[in-house]
Structure formats: structure tokens, C-alpha cells
Image (cartoon, rainbow, N blue to C red; front, side, top):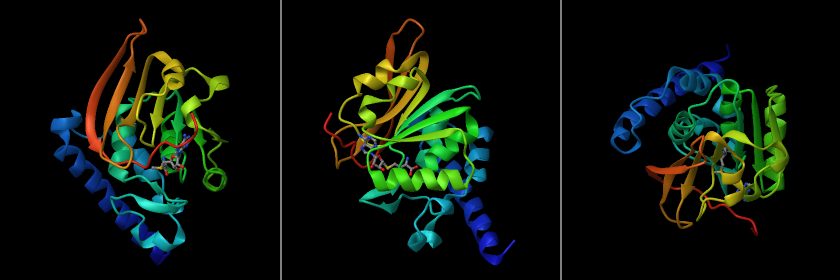
Length: 225
Ligand code: SAM
């Protein structure tokens, strides 16, 4: 290992510790006592510095969002872990992500499930993320340029859907593309303010249940939908 790699590993270990600390601190609101071993293993396997712009390299493992260009961000590691945890993923799941950004969350998902579909509305980011994911040999992630509000009808239905930009309402196409028995995690609320992270479950009967998880701050879901 080069000196740099040792630094990354040490910083990452600290990041993993912070994730569990934040999880314990927010348990009253989220109901999550700790992030499960499988999700923590994915957080350990994926090197966040591969998804962070060079100029922020030294902050790669800080437990906070970082700029990725085009006014967008890579999300806070704790939030990535929490959202992933709440999806309660199984190996055979097919997952849709709206808001590819850097591709980091998609890589975490790809460590846990069979197939990940992710949509990004900004061309540069979609291209960059696809390149990063290809360089890291993630063959089970498909990146698409487009408005994720509409979902990915040709690949629906999905076992789980994760939206990583703030919406003012649950996009009806996404709800439609969620399998019976499926779960969706999405920040909902006014844009440029604090939103509520919501967990939505679709029962086998089709009945929808919505629960509040945590106050969060995400960049807005854009597009002309
Ligand atoms: N999940 C990302 C990661 O791991 O780096 C972080 C996502 S960032 C907080 C939100 C992303 O959603 C931005 O890249 C933004 O361009 C994208 N976005 C916003 N509106 C969108 C839409 N309607 N469809 C698809 N992507 C959208």
C-alpha cells in the first residue's frame, strides 16, 4: 500500500465510526439502532475518494456532502448508509436510483443487489458517473440520462427505489413502478429548505404506507415534469 492508500483506509475507518455514531444519535427519529453488517461492508468496500473531485480529495471520507460540479453534491456518508439500510435490500433485488450524481450511492447499491438502474438529469454527471463505475468494473449498474421523475418504465417494476434529490410530492410514475411489497426512500418537502426523508412501502395488496424518517437537506429534483 502506498502512503496515500493507508491514509484513505484510516480516514475511511473513521468515517465508518461516524456513520454508526450518527445512526445511534438519530435512532429516536429513524428507528434504526445501527447500520447492518452487510450495508457497512458495502460502505467499506466502495472507496468514496474514487467518486469525489480531485480538489476535494482530502475530504473524501469526511461525513458530509461534497460538491461534484454543476451545483450538485455527493451525499453525506451517514445519509447514504441510512437510506440504503431502510431499503432493506436482498441480493436478488432490482433497484432504481433517481439522481446518479457521482455514482457513489449506485456503487453501494451494486455491492448489495443484482441490478441497479440509475437516472441522472445532467449530462456531464451522467457521463462521469458511468465512466467511474465502468472503471471500477460495476457491470450491474446501468446509467441513463433523463428525468428520473418518470422512472424507467422499460425496466419496471423495481423492488426498491431511492430518490437522492428533494421532491415536493411523490412522483406518481415511481409509485407505479414500485413492486407490490417494495420500498421507496425519498426526501420530500419544499426545495432549498429542510425536507423530510420518507419511507414508503407498498403492501402486497397495493396499499401505500408512508413514514417519516429524518429531517434532511437535499438538492432539488429538477426537470420539467
Ligand atoms: N446519489 C448521488 C451520489 O451518490 O453522488 C448524489 C445525488 S445529488 C444529491 C442529486 C442528483 O440528482 C444530482 O446529480 C442532480 O443532478 C440529480 N437530479 C436532480 N433532478 C433530477 C431528475 N429529475 N432526474 C434525475 N436526476 C436528477
